[in-house]
Amino acid sequence: MSEQKMIYLQPTPVRIWHWLNALGIVTLCLTGAQIRFPEYLSMFGSYKTAILLHNTAGIVVAVSFSLWFFYYKLIANTLLKLYVPNREELQHGLLRQAFFYFFRYFRGDPSPHHATPDNKFNPMQKSAYLAIMFVLMPLVSLTGILLMNVTPMRELVILSGGLKFLVTGHFLLASSLCAFLFTHVYLATLGHSPMAHIKPMWTGWEEAEEHVEVKEQDRN
Amino acid sequence: MKTEIIKWTFRLLPALALLAAASIALATDAGGPGYSYGGTAGKSGNCLDCHGNAKGIGDRYFIDPVKYGHTSHARIGCPACHDTVGRGHPGDQLVPAKTGCLECHGDKAAEYARTPHAANASCGDCHDPHRVNAPNEISGQEMNRMCASCHKKESMAAKHARWLPQADLHLDMLPCTTCHTGSKNYVINLYIIKREGDRRKGVFRVADFAELEKIAAGKDIRSIIDRNGDNYISLAELGLFNRNPAYGHLRLQGVLTPETVTHNFEILQNRWDCTFCHASGPGAMQTSFIALPEKSGAFRRVAVEKGAVLDTLNGPPDFYLTGASRNGTLNNIGLAIIAGGMVMPVGHGFLRFLTRKNRKGKEHQS
Ligand code: HEM
Image (cartoon, rainbow over all chains, first blue to last red; front, top):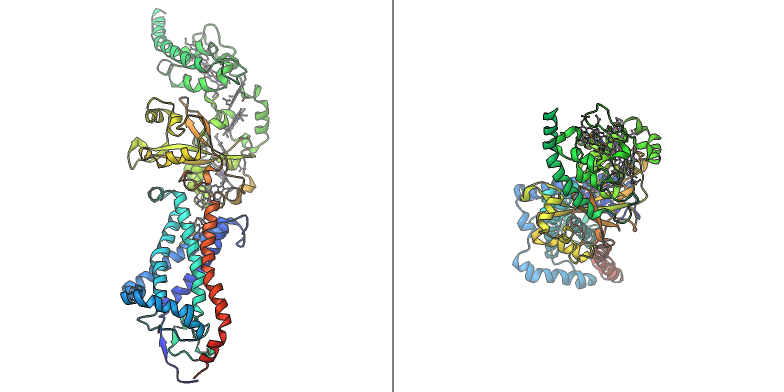
């Protein structure tokens, strides 16, 4: 094994946030599915349990989303740099990355993108996360919070087009998030080894070079 | 004595005018179909000369002729229940008899007597015999007012909130009887609600006859929704009503109502189970009506096209019962989106598997 350079890619708050959010969103997807299709699904026991779990997870995810936003924007102040793709990335980076995923990857070429703390995400990740974190998450949280307080927030519900419109939006946004989840998890395994990208999210450290086997002691 | 007579003559004059108006109004529906008791004309008329005049008789003895005129009881007449009104009434010191409900509603009374609630409230606590309504012509709100004289709204919301999420919403959208009496079928009644005083910020209330009459501008109030006047609301008509900018201050409120009301007011164990309503199966939520107020305060129902509540585009925008009123087309769109998310793992993963040798070498190169 050659010398390995480790870089500290994911700060602790980000990691806590990420796994809390992941657990929350999986819970929301599953309980949400039972809430919509109670005749077919009952993995959480009663309907009421599903609702209470969904509401709790919803609040946790909404709060953790706000924390994430404030952390990146106010404390780290890297929000825009990390998540908004620049011109170059939009014009060439996206294509380059797509070309890598759908062609060069199969040949065994390394990724054209190298993660650094200042530039963690490749252009495709940036665009996807931008859509998820700045559009989908806020909207799904807002519609969810309105659905949770229909009577107290009746005026807002009416203003936003009615209960039915809100639920429709919530459901379609939720489906999109669920779709994203599959893609996201899969893409995360596309490092030089399946766990290469997933491990840093747990430990914070990423190996800068892409030829080292995953060793158990690297965790923690 | 003389002053007494003059006094009564003065009191009777407005009453007579009212009677004339009332008899014209009543004559229009006397002899209508379905009434085996005949018309109301003459049956209660002379009593209402005095008792139908709020000013003359005072609140205590006032019988609202419009509300009374609508009831089935009007067709049997006052003397059927007050059969001992003396000739010298009201000056004769005789108190007219008041027939109990039991005489004619033995079945209902027997049903009610079997329940523990019979010890808590008698017929008269919930019903005023002079303004009774059939279950399908009374609004959920009005039905809840019967209970509210003893079960206060605030304390009920607090008690139900202990186990029922969004108890305030539930108690607004469900008559108490939906949960506390048994019924085979439930329907959704859509009431037209209106902002108080037409103001932008006014609270919504069920619009009454006078308000809708003004909006209908001389036509039958049904025409507000039923544009072609066929006494049936199609999905298209419903959509036009919901989207009409001129009706910005009007909305439809859906209330899940029992089709029949039994008198066993009790705690039904299966209402703990949210899926009694929130997953009522594909056949449910199909039947709905627009409930229009009448002058008498009763409601008449106009049938709405089947499944209207489930319709995303034309259905009432404010009624959604999670788990029960989901829309099939949207389910498929959602499913397609999720399937889209699988394309990457499945398609890419397959190619990845086929080309695994290419990477194996490189990963261990150095
Ligand atoms: C982030 C904050 C979220 C909040 C506050 C929230 C809240 C809600 C609320 C209040 C409802 C109505 C039923 C209930 O009271 O539980 C609901 C329904 C639902 N939620 Fe969420 N939710 C959130 C996120 C999500 C996510 C991330 C998903 C899935 C990826 C999801 C999927 C669903 C589904 C499928 C329904 C059923 C809607 C229907 O009947 O069509 N929700 N949500």
